[in-house]
Length: 374
Figure 1 (cartoon, rainbow, N blue to C red):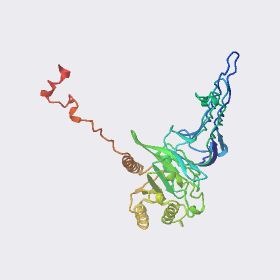
Figure 2 (figure 1 turned 30 degrees about the horizontal axis):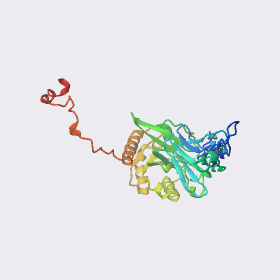
Figure 3 (figure 1 turned 30 degrees about the vertical axis):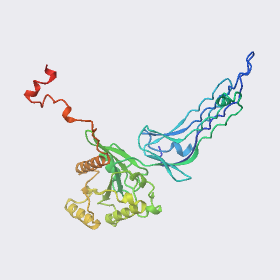
């Protein structure tokens, strides 16, 4: 399936049905009175995040989404039927923006939670609605109210705890395949990754996090070089960035340090907030460096980059050094999750002294007075 993370659509809620002017006309019943019903409500447009979707391709070709209008009221006290609502199912992490005002309408982060995008118009009033003691034969009615309509931009930003950053062929796809259940395309030429890949990493029982692998960046990506920086948006929700550096490039003329500096500059050009995220160095392809040169090469790269954060030496292909990296990532992600979650408030009515004493910890003289033993 083709990966699509942007789409533009038109939505329109249904109009309300018009009210009816009608009077009761039956034999032997004079002055039967008004019996025109109200119109029905127009259908609304809702959005729901679906965890089973991972692309906006359905909205690349189906761009018009319009709900039906409500039915008009009829005589004999018949109200018009309300139209059915329509639901747009999108991946988790989709942002809806009004194209005219450029204002963000909603951001769907919770699977299954419905969000109203366009409200359907209310139905008009029939003359039955205007009957009163002083107006016995009303002839007023109102048309239905129009439904909301707008042009929307849909933008998908994947939800991941960790994002992989690096040049093409740095080994990002090999790493995510080694530590998770993701199976991206892996080859010995640049730009094998053409769209983001997500993988779930399980460190232990009930200890897991999500990793996102985006296409590699090159110098000038902010100006559109290579695949550009269009996929960097998928790193904006991550808690940690892993900067993958190739210690053994195929071309001896390639300087890994210069490439790493270029990526950091492109990151700052795209979004200063993304550049300020926690970033760790992961020096990959250690197995391709002679053992006698490994320590010196690692020290040289860190010294030239003047990097002060955590540094990990791994070989994704040989699966060396992955365990310390994964446990450190889990500790960081778990700490961030605890910091983001507010502490539970204790109910002031809660009195710990009023609770019964557990049998395992109660002294013998108190167990004998416990009503459970009487």
